[in-house]
Length: 315
Image 1: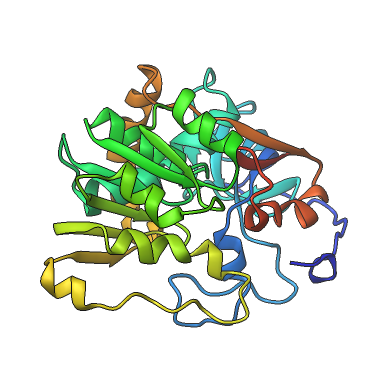
Image 2: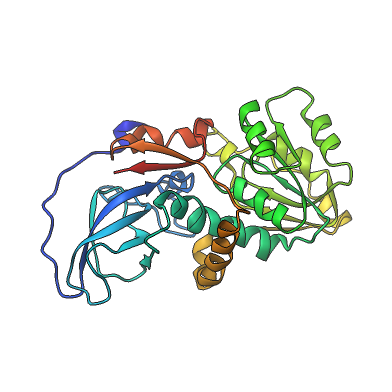
C-alpha cells in the first residue's frame, strides 16, 4: 500500500444537529482487513471503501461536544470513526467504555482482535481441554489472543511466528507450549515434532507453506478456522490450496468467518474477554505510531511482520 493511495485533507468541523456528538479520536486501529476493504470485491462481507471516502477503521474516542442526551462530554467510546482526528456521530453503534480501561487494552483485547479470536476459536473451533490447537500468525493481534484463550481452555497450544524474538515472547510471556519460526529450516519436521498427537483445531491466519503442513497433521474430526490469509494479501497470485482428500478421510470441518456477521454475540463475547483480562489470562502488547499520517506507511508493517503487537495510531 503506497502513499499515493491516500491524501490528507483539513476540513471544517460541521455544526451538530440534535442527537449528534463531536468526537476526538485518541487511538486508531490498523488491521490487515483494511487491504481487502480497498479492493473491488463487491461480493465481500463489506463493500469496498470508495475513492474519495475516509479510510475505514475503528478506534477509541472522547466526546468533546454533545447534543445527545445519552452521551456526556468526557465519555470514552469505541466505534467506527475512520482515519480522522475528529468525527461527528449520531451515537448509533458506539460502545461506551469504562473510564479505567486503557485505550490500548480496548483495541488490543476487548474489540476487533479479541472478538475475532474468541468467536473463531470458541464458536467455530469448539475447543476441548486436552486437545492440540495450532495457530498460524501467532504473534499477531488475533493469533496471540487465540493461543491464550486456548491455554485458558486447557489446550496444548503451538504457533508460528516470523522471528525468534516473537517465538520467545509467545512461549515466555503468553504461555504457548511451542512457538516455531516459520522461516527456519526443516519447518515440516519442527511442526511434526511439536504436534506428536496431531492437531485438533487449526486457527488459520496466514496461509502459505504452514497451511499445507498443518493440514496434513489434522486429526479425525478436526476443525479448521479460517480467519485470514495474510501471506497472500500482497502475492501476485494466490498460493495453491491443499488437496481436499483429507477433508473426507479425516472428516474435517473447515469454516471461514467475518466478524460483522456476528455482532449480535458481541455483548456476550466482550464479557468473556473482560473476564479473561481481569484475571490475567490475556496479555497484550501495543505497537503505537504517532500522528494520523503515520498510518499511511505504518499499515504496511502488518504485511511485512514489522509490528510488535497490536498496531495502532495515537492521535
